[in-house]
Length: 141
Image 1 (cartoon, rainbow, N blue to C red):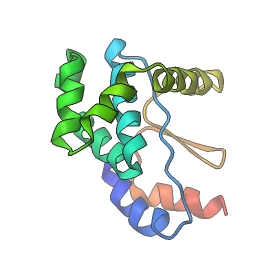
Image 2 (cartoon, rainbow, N blue to C red; image 1 turned 135 degrees about the horizontal axis):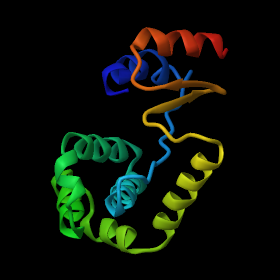
Image 3 (spheres, rainbow, N blue to C red; image 1 turned 30 degrees about the vertical axis):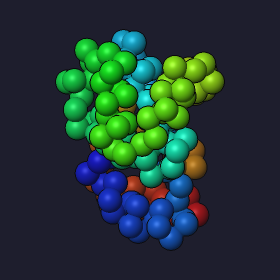
């Protein structure tokens, strides 16, 4: 989606027509969960921080696989987040439980491939060009 994301945001999210909702996929070891928790904790401070954190993790995927807690905390600091609030969230159980619950819900409806996009029940599998998203959005009105 990262290729089409900016066009989707500019043409559909910014107008209020579409809302992007991220559902975690915890299938690449323990750091899948840790990375999702970290992004959600960033988002608790400001929704824009979720996406900034998410993009940073995406751009540094190789580092994420072997990362320890310090990596996630340092990433939050680099993005200017409130460190104490981030650490309390990251170390707490509430956000971790939510991430696990969302992953289980995704699996329960049969979504097992990344990326998968659900546009009002129309499922798109894999990376798609912006035009495919635009057509699916138009058809869902």
